[in-house]
Amino acid sequence: MNKIVKHIIYTLLVILFSTAVLTLYGIYFSWANSKNELPFLNILIPSIIIESAAIFFLFVKKSLKYIPEVLINESIQDTTIFMKNFISTGTTVTIVSNRVSWLFSNDDLINHLKNKIDEGIKIEIITPSELSNEHKEKLNKAIFINSKENMSPYSRFTLINGDRNGSEKLAIAKGTHPEHEITIFNSTSGPQIIAMAKDIIRKSKGIST
Image (cartoon, rainbow, N blue to C red; front, side, top):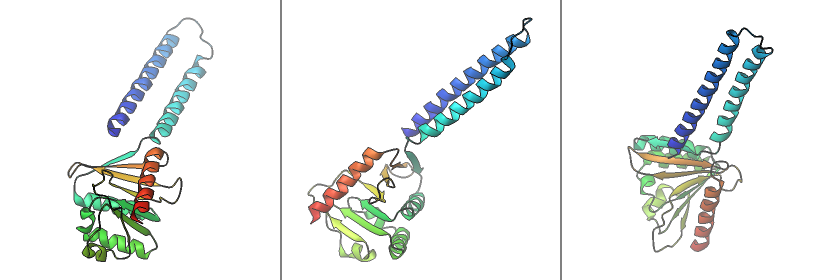
C-alpha cells in the first residue's frame, strides 16, 4: 500500500512538473516570436524554473519522511539479513511473538543475537506462553517474558530502542516468502503505532509479574 502511495505522489509531481515546463516553453516560444518587447522575461523564466525545482525537491524530501519504509523479502535469508541489520542499530531489542519458532529455527540469527548480547545489547522476548527450556538455553542471556495469556495475541513485532524516546524503530511483518513484507516505522513515520507497541510491551510485562 505504501509503495502505491509513493508511486501516486511521484506520478502527480511528474505531471505537475511537466505541465509547468510546457507552460514555460509556451511563454518562451511566444516571447521569441513576438514582435513586441517583453522586458525581464529572460530573467523571469529561469527564476520560475529554479523555484519550481526547489519546491519539488523540498516537497519530496519533506513528504517522504512521513511514509514508513516497506521491504519485500523473497527468502528466509533476506529476512535474516534484515533482522541482523535491524537489531544491530539498537541498544535494546524487544521481540513480541507467539512462539518465536522463526527465531529458534534460525541458528545464524541466534548466534548473531548472542554476539549482540555480549556487546551489551539488551534482548527481550515476549510470548503469551512459557517457552521450552530447550529454546531458552539456545539464548540463555536473553530476558524471557511470559504474558500468561490464554489466547494468542495478534501483535507480532520487533521494537528497538524502546527506552530512548525519539530513537525507536518498529518492524512489523506480514505474509510469507516470497511475499514477506516488513514495514518499518520510526518516530516520524509512525509515532502513534510505536506508542501502542510500547504500551503492549509495558502491559505484557505487568501481566507477567
